[in-house]
Every structure is written in C-alpha cells, then in structure tokens.
Image (cartoon, rainbow, N blue to C red; front, side, top):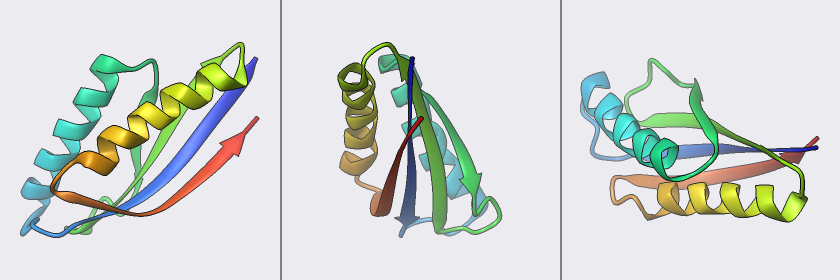
Length: 93
C-alpha cells in the first residue's frame, strides 16, 4: 500500500475577509472531492485572509496511481483563477 501526500501553500489575492477566503476554499475542495479519490483539508493559516495551506492525501496499491490522483488534484488547485500556488511538497509513505 502506498500513501502519497502533497502539502500545498497558496495565496488568495482577492480575499478581503475570512468569508471570501472560505468561499474560494470550499469551491476548490468540493470540486476535488467530487472528482478524485483524495482527501483534502486546510491545515494551516486558518485565521489569515489571503493565505492557505492544504494537505491532500491519496492511498492506493501502486505509486503511479496515487501520483496521478494527486497530480490531478494539484491541477485543479493550480488552475483556479483566485489562487496562486507558492509551494508544493510531496511525501511518500
């Protein structure tokens, strides 16, 4: 069994309040959960308007399968117009 994790830091430039931030985060995380076999959660910067950190996790029997799912989730985050991804850290267990 392979467990893959990506930690994604991003900036939300247009957020003027926590409500604006949560709207963007909910939109992205809901889209990822509905389409891909991954778990996603905000792990840091909960009280900061324009920053976020997500942890995205996938589990599978083959590393290539897990990597594809995580890459697809990362593509959704990367292509969202309200976000700019600053760092991505990959971890394998």
